[in-house]
Length: 137
Image (cartoon, rainbow, N blue to C red; front, side):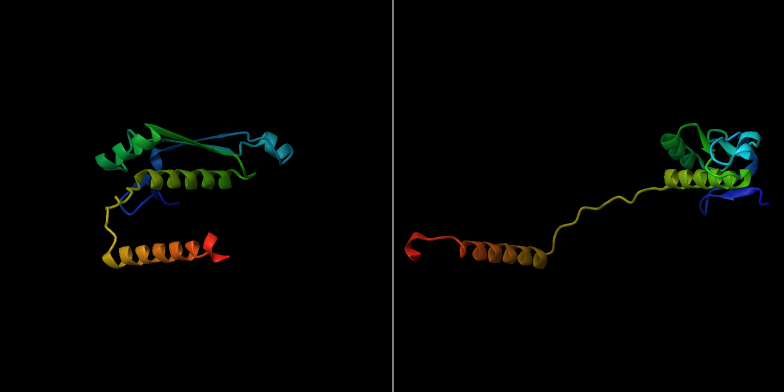
């Protein structure tokens, strides 16, 4: 098993920083679900993690807070619930680390303005030709 969890190209979380606990999940599965600790709870402390640069840490903490808690109890298998929790953590961190591109304002080209104005005048002409005129009887 790999001892690191790759989030992005530049961000790799050591698995030693992940805190796992397992609890009874309940739900479907009968007696197995009532006697087995199949639900996985994952805790990750962002403040003390060595996986981030300072800028990344500030960005993630702004969006997720100082720590993250994820509970997965959908599956009957502890291993599958553990995988689900890990996938959710990676997805949350990827989304938190994403820097949205800034939209730059642009001006329409002369051709685009001309096409728009031509289309408007054609639509106006088309609609005005449908109007009833009193002298047309």
